[in-house]
Image 1 (tube, protein in one colour):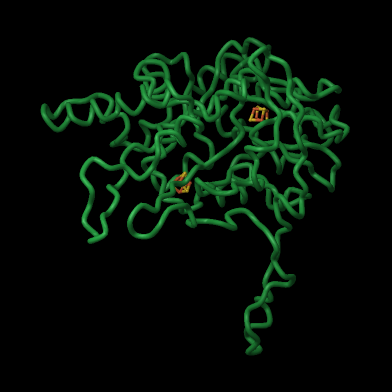
Image 2 (cartoon, helix red, strand yellow):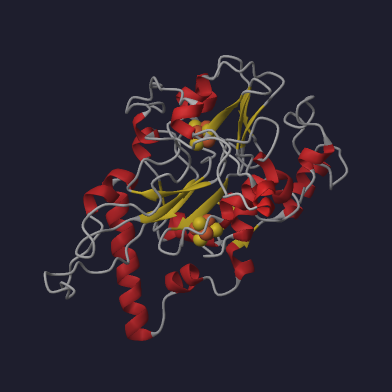
Length: 366
Ligand code: SF4
Ligand code: SF4
């Protein structure tokens, strides 16, 4: 266990699938140096194949007794998709816009497809995903080189690129497939929870840019914080696939506001819901999902009847700044306790290696 745990809550009822978070992350961290195909943040359509393709069927994580499970390493071409580009420069010469190579697969290949019959009972929702910075990370347990570590200061899970030899056991061991092989460096890489921003009191790039304002970032032990209240008090924010046994620290408010189904005449069927509970039970755990759903609907009713509900206020998040409770005084104190300049990075292990020490990689806003 880390001394503290940084966590993110995503309210799926508010995600509009705009991919702003994806672009914010990609331009900050993964648009170069063998990371081109990686999406540390992706937003997939559920139900759908996801990214990488069918990641939920690829194994990894732990069984109910805590034993590490065998997992598959996704194929870059067929499971992630090779990024393609367009002949933009030739358009001025009157040529049609065409990709340089025929695309065969990519993230969001099945965006907005969903399931069911339009317009009577079709449905889908957006599922944004980053590394869960798990309390019991499958990636860390799988690594024979002790190259993956969980920061004591905030529970962020990182890869020590100097120790990593590119064996990729971590990719097999992560049931969320949120750690990637960099073919250029022959190393594994993953979301770093924007720790250079976090240490300066800024939220992650994906959360800062989120158009739907679905993302809360804060410490789980900050009892006045929205993250703590949503996860630990109201318990409306719950982990994805808790059966994987990694104890994820990204929490989701499940989608509970769904339109009614339509009858043959196109009229709404009262009290019907498009998203089947069984699908949500599988994604979030049966008891956890029903508790979250019942609490949200109860509080919504209370708000309508009385005008009061702290939970609804939290979820609406009137002030953007209220969604982030990041204590950079804490990081400054940690740095001081280490005998460093208070503004110095608190983590040496990730940054000192020859692969990560370049100032440009670390610099906030690069
Ligand atoms: S989501 Fe995967 S990569 Fe991230 S900490 Fe958990 S097991 Fe590791
Ligand atoms: S930026 Fe926010 S609303 Fe847009 S896709 Fe990402 S999580 Fe969803």
